[in-house]
Image (cartoon, rainbow over all chains, first blue to last red; front, side, top):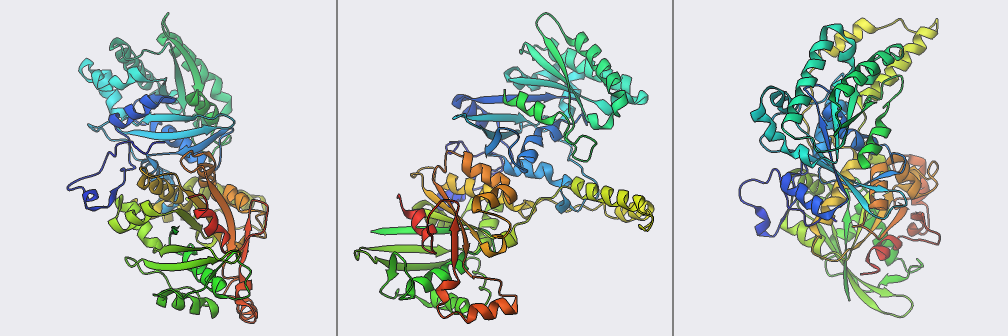
Length: 267
Length: 300
């Protein structure tokens, strides 16, 4: 039960709850205090997606919610979310109701307050509820961290991650005009995060996103580039596994690798 | 003994129609229900008004925003004469939507939710809207283009015209709660009711798929309807430990579609209006208009 979770987010001014009404939680996001509540409860998994702007972090973060709207994902069922409004707002520009002509997603803004999405899941034939905590961190924050040691401390939550993935846009890896810069920016980001001791997990994922943009006959090229990067990031203390994912339905293979990625999150 | 049941649901969910059909069934001497209304309630103007519309097979008037209608009935058990008082507030669906958007339950609504013995949650298949993805629309468009290309008689490609049309369509609608699809909206309402009752005992909810006659030909049970059309809500009630007790009903309280003249005439010609009502459930057994209500308040 999440009923005693403190309300957070958008309450402002005088609290009318004192007049006998009930102020609901904001629904936009859970803050760090809210996240601590789930951590005390146990069974939570903090999923951290690290990547530069436009690497597909938010699309991937909201993907479990979007997929659960269509029914269970294998044996994974929806149970509850304290951030339904946050998920819905992030989905909005991909919906017909937004009146947009192409699916889009709002870029996550750099904010002072860490915004965490929450999802409780029920796995078939298992009694306990599994909680996913999904911090939506702006790509700009990772970009700043890549540029300055001073900025890396703002990403201290990374130390608490139960699952960590470095995201790279597979489409950029294929584009010779963007490839080298994209790889170099990611390299700088990972090195900065390592230098600040923000990676405490023994194993992380290098996740090639937007894989639907890569034709099948060029997949091996992308995988080879990612393997090379993974080996570079790897050390005695850190294992790096390469995975690929797409959050698009309008693709040759809709939602490629997404279910497997979500199962890795659930643990 | 005193019980109260709150009718939950968004606009046009079927709450008032259910209440009208319930009242007329309880009033009918020959309707075989476990309970009867022997004494007229003190304030019965609202019930009389909605019953009048129901008997004439007219669409129900929308419950006015900001003015919840309170129905108080004394029900007498047909078997042994035991009595209990029942309070049923009828709240406009727009109130729920507005207060979810505002993230604030008014003192009046809060009191009703906290004091309720059980809940009836109404969903009208005719009002359910999906949160369709732009991608899904584009997939259909891709398929139509492929069909057109494959057929010699098909229309010529319209790529250029579409591009021009979409280029003018850059203004997107800002998000508000009305953008949330029905499936997610009912989940959020149930989560909010659960939150409002965080300091009181767990209660029971009867989920009523109203206008069941619209879907009974394509869905074998209310459970199957939820799985197919409201999958998030279906997962929510099955997998949520805060609502361990729920029942599912399909209720046709109107008995048919009033907009179809033949159907309306047929309903009006029925000798016993209460026989318009049809109730089904995913559970085995016989059910009537009182079943969702009694189930909701049964174990409290």
